[in-house]
Length: 156
Image (cartoon, rainbow, N blue to C red; front, side, top):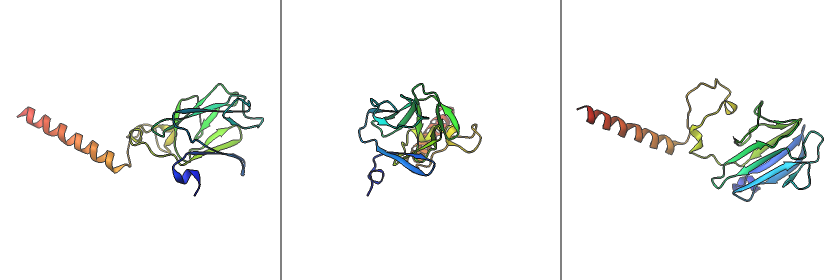
């Protein structure tokens, strides 16, 4: 069983089809810095990676966010350049120049599932946010039902 199967997010860095690095994000509440400089937490020696390229933060709630830390080539998330911070999800396409980065093993945070973003959608960005978590859907439905009953009672 690998780390991502145990619930530990893992960053995989590819140059074309060649796996260059596989790095686990074990510590929660930590900001991992990625770049060519040896002082970074995640060192990737590649000409298209800046000395201090990006940071990846693993929150206490297991949400991972990325931020471009002033790199020359930028950070591309699902085809769009981002400066951050921006939440990443499992199998998001993160590009640093020609390098492809994938993060595996990210748990879905039910609080964030309502915050649909155009970078995570292949459809129009004006679509209605959705949530696939049935517990959150039940809570939202219950709140809607209670507020409707209160409104009806107040009108009577």
